Image 1: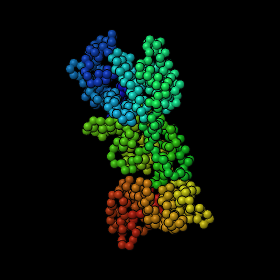
Image 2: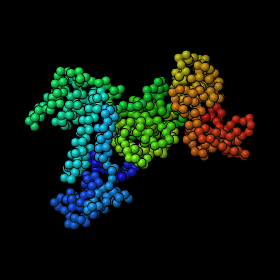
Image 3: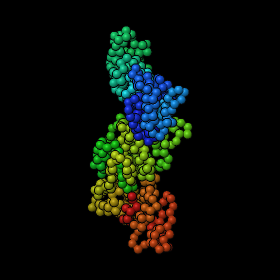
Image 4: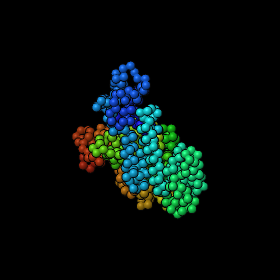
Length: 568
């Protein structure tokens, strides 16, 4: 059970689902216990906090009733969470967002590296959902705690601004701090960061005007002058001192990169309509899954669609093909999130998804989860939790099967149409291939026999320089040997056509494998695992068939033209 006070008072269960706490007095009781962070609160104090000068007729019994209602609302752990000790009630939990916020602040202040400091402060500020103790901040028991937390948040914003200035992120910072300064015009540290960012961005006159505004406000409202540090910065700006010169800007405009999407090395052929359709779906839905067989181009389409979208916190690719452990930890590592996924020694793995969800709360970003078919169940559970927690998150998934969770929109990725397949094959064959009346029939035959699958076409195109177009076409009866030359720079599963088939095969259950082997063989042949005398064996990692008798072909792979049966 987790509790949130950095915004409206909130409770979430172990799966990240909101827990409803009914009745205003019961919620006030919970807020009062959270304010004391595990310390016991006497019954008399609670009665005074909840009812003030108009207590109920029997205060002790009424308070016990509210405590019982709170325990019931918190579920089966309610009695362990809300306990009576030393003459008072206490809430025993360290799963409070305010405590995680304080821990991240401490870690940020202990770091001397600006990028690490900025990242930790960003993780801490992402926990906020609104003013602290929303709904109860004006109550006497919560006012001091809410004010203290709000002040800590402003200080964290100032510290992050200074860290980003040290990283050269002044242009975006100058715009971002304008609204914050307008809301807190008398904070000199915040004003100094804004003036510094404006000056480094070539906006010296605005920096000087900001100082003049503050000086006038201080004189009118408090009868004071700006402090010596801010006055010194003002004089330095007037003299244009070299010490104020900007540091080299980072590769991106934020303290941390806003994307890790790879830059494509080749043009995307025949998919512009699909790219537009996927982008439109992401504009209307928060979860879109691209489905289709191996080699059809799901990853390339997803990257092309994601690259053209603008999210304040960026677009991020997480490759899951080789993942066998915790999906949440892989995602967190790729995002560079340090929200203490393993903060407590011996913490169970189930906590990682919840801590990741907390870190993403309040962010507006696109998450691209690539090649999820072997991890459908854990990916589905994680994505469902993240989408329920982070309202600004959108997820684009590539998988050979859907996640089958609420809100998912499926987009089946089809093979290329004949004309697009010809363009792709020709483009990947190199500048030496000029389609003409002699080569075009062979090119069209290759594209037709490879069913317009982009990966197979690219593998075949790589053989044109050695065999020529006709040579490639004539050898397609043995396509798995023909297209077995490994291509550097690709994942293992995409380097050969056999590797693509093997990857798809490994995702199948044993009954599915048996059915596909039986369906894929020519009539009249005994299949692996079936028929009289058929003996079935398999090795993990390769689709293995049975040699029925000496001299006959294995049932491992169907002959040319029948490979569709092995692609889920």
